[in-house]
Image (cartoon, rainbow, N blue to C red; front, side, top):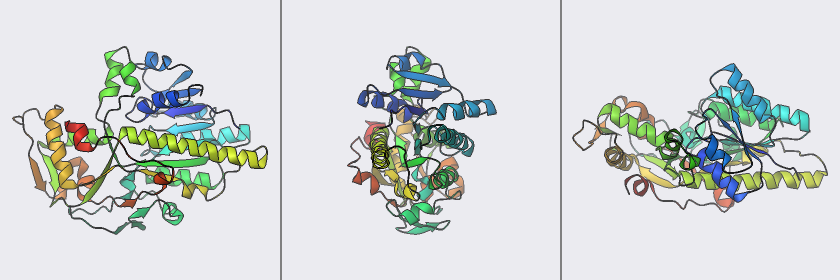
Length: 360
């Protein structure tokens, strides 16, 4: 068996910040490194024990070089930082290739993508049970390798990175596993920020998250909660704690897969070509109509302080696509998929629903 060292990218974020503490609890002796821009969480991370910090960012060549070098020294990399931008993921890939060159075996990459790839991109706010987006038939079936192989750069917002990483895995450069959450909500009680000794550090543990933040900021900008058309289209959401749970399930499977290959071959890992297309796992918690989403966020905007100047109430307003602001794509289209692979691992969503979390 390989003695693992795990690198977590995005350990200050909504998902990664919870993952680092839960991973430490579940694997108390596992060496962990976090790649971070901020120093505000240094003391909190140190308190976990056996966790190293590598500092850098994704915004300049020096930061990407530091990321590449850090990746190359770890047998497992969990990218909870960025799926939308290709540059950092290409740096990760270069680091994975260096690891293989040095160790004569694949590193494991757990890459967080997302189910935005599986939106039908319609703009009417009407429900459709089936569809197609840039050649990808919907509902997307995560157990169908042909469907997974069809993900490409046209499938926004994550497809460009997904396509590159799948090609690399299929070329034998790394053992890649994908975790695809829906719209993630909730602030985890396990977030590393809650252990911080400064206000700056603690704020990382008390944010609404990326998707919920987009929704709330859009309401703040528009002055109302937009609903596109009749709002019968469907959107899917999942609590951050359920995403972390699935990552741990997939991590355990990835390590088990690798160790089984090591035992069979006697010395070196041989990640099978085509294997990546059978290792995409969707974290799906709740199914909503867009009108339900708009109503929940109209109330959440008031509760969470995004309704200044609106007399203590936020109206839900049905508008055309072009007037729905920056989150129009998610308010108008249908997110269509069948999430089967996660259930095969014994995973299920157990956390509170969207309304209970944001409004409770």
